[in-house]
Image 1 (tube, rainbow, N blue to C red):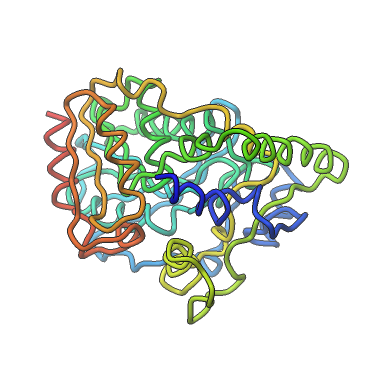
Image 2: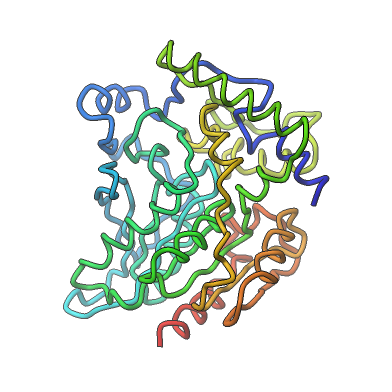
Length: 361
């Protein structure tokens, strides 16, 4: 785990301590960003159909609807609601919330999962976290351990008042970094009845893994960046991926960084709202407040999905060992980390369907 932590802490996940940064607010869409900030910085961003970009094709058996609701801090969340076209709105259905990888957005992996699971009898809500994607909040790319967990609870708020949702059958899927935050949310929100993580990263565990002088240096960099940001009104962030998708992985990247680039930097998974991760002022929070202190107290069904060849597998294994029953580890053969972002032939949808339907009985 130490080698993996070193690579990621000096690479693409922890943007605030990376060597390349931009002292500007990350643009998700220049026209709509200006519109949002000129009215209410907590409002979600609305875009026209011509501005939308999804990395997958919507099934002709599924309806997708943009929905907006406030979290308890008054930030408007942008989410996509997926339902089967043959759904009977007079009935109630189990629901699943899908959170994106750390720095990702709902138009990527969450939509891939939602598109499939809606066909399997679930109401599915794919979310953009607050301060990310098309959700509200300024400054952009702000990260908070508590806020990421709140994103899931706010989604439960929304789903639980829909007439076609059974509020006693709401579960969560956390992809990559959202896996740790989903478990954190479930520890504080008893309305979440089951959690599945897919190629989980416990980001706060990762960022708390450094010690000694290296940790002090990182905390100092994050702390002092707040003065510069306060004075200028701009927040440094690391833009890890190009403004438009490229056709080849750049030379010289280490194996893990190259794997992430194969998704985020190329047509396969590129999205204009997922070019970086967090702003510089956020690192202190992520390095100080662990997500899964109360994981061992959870008594709901848990499913940890990991790729056989995924560099992230150790996070799922550690969480599995800490968690109490009922729990299950499911290893996907011949799958790396990003295979389970969008690989519809590798993501174990039948297993996920069975897990939630069994959990909701």
